Length: 335
Length: 269
Image 1 (cartoon, rainbow over the protein chains, first blue to last red):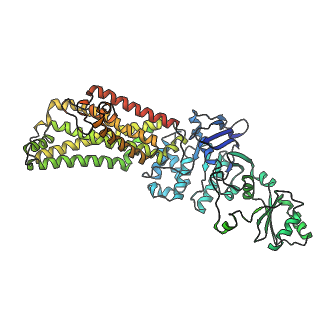
Image 2 (image 1 turned 90 degrees about the vertical axis):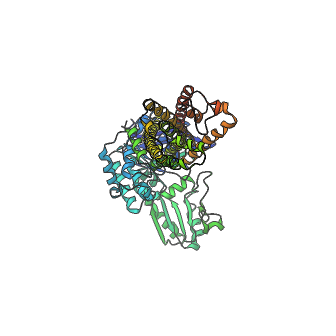
Image 3 (image 1 turned 180 degrees about the vertical axis):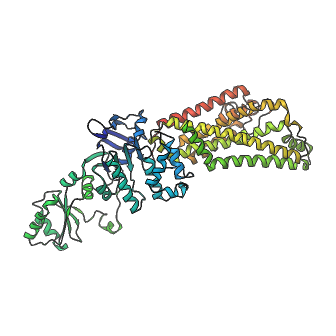
């Protein structure tokens, strides 16, 4: 069941604070039914808090949540019978096997046919190790089991927090195929992830949050089309000249020096207009040695979130750039 | 019911269940057999008589039960703390809640399963204790004719039931402490501190401590002739019938606190 507005999940003005720290600050999410929804944000932006609220683990201070077309309040735990979730790390009884863990988990919440457990062990590729104790599992195997646990009730809405954590490349591809297949069956999959490349190839729609607020949401293709980026490479000693040439055409915020040493610039422009840049530079006697036309979720993400972790999370400072003032030294908006 | 049977299956497969039971049985059997084996070697006649009392039936039934409810109470406290704490430490409560399970139902049914396991543990330990008592009696050259004492055997089920309620109350305290601490280790640590703290406090504040959970659990099992252990409390011990009511009050109170906390807690991590 979905809402009249076609949404499988909607939050309006969702607020949550932990002491003085505001984790969610009026979050408005609109997740269409039957899509893979990429839920993005820097560390501490509020992604996990959102998933905790959506699964009834924490109680919001304000705002509303609608799951599969119906309001979800504190007492509506049965709404979660149609929701599967993997929030933060997968959790199991370490002394039980994978099969036993799924069986005992199935004893809570919605009823699950026993054959479902065998199906899921097969789906996540754990059949051969299903009788081994979970404490003997690798992180990737636990993650697979966590995904199986989230799928236990054959949910209409699936909430996954960093599902690719610990998975090997084959596991990531299999997970991606599984999630795409679920979406094609009309189920809705919300994937919170830091792996922007993974989201870019998997998601239909993305929502990007920063500091507990939604900063952009929409179909991925549309967002990238309007936020298209063309990367241009010129001789490193001609970077300043290239910037001076392009600056009048591309106002503040649209031209970024991404790597001075290698001579790379990023220009926000529709990808199908990349030749404009080449013409401009050639007209000024600056010859382009590399041109990467296309779209880049990472650029969009960094631009919308300011490329910063949330307050209190700190920045990850690269050692090589520490003398120059941090990892972002050498990068900056110049026009 | 599926949640209850799931709880039982989890406990049966849990190493802590068998370690706890094994320790209790091992200590009981070791003490009784060792006392029986050495009873005739005592140079002091009073000590020899005291040692033989331990392995002389029907009084031995009482002493075995007192041992189980005494040391077993502490073990039940630790066991209850381990079960509740692990639901938070391992995050398994989180998984159940995210599936739409009621927090209160989940935690309370988990404790009902613990109480059933405690009942099984008491019965098994008591049976082993009786066998150890018979062995000890033979080693001490004491008659076992009192084994079939009809008055004691008639009274035994009721005494076992009271013992179970007292131990379940102590287990519930550990369960609640670990729930409040959201941690196995913290629950066990605080539980031990509480247990021994109450024991030591009974030396200086007997009129207050006699109402506290471990003291009432101990007093509820008094036969009128003796109470044992660090919670005996001397003249400040409550009458058994009054203590039995307080045991129920502590048991229900502890579980209500655990339920309320579980219902309101924010589950993270």
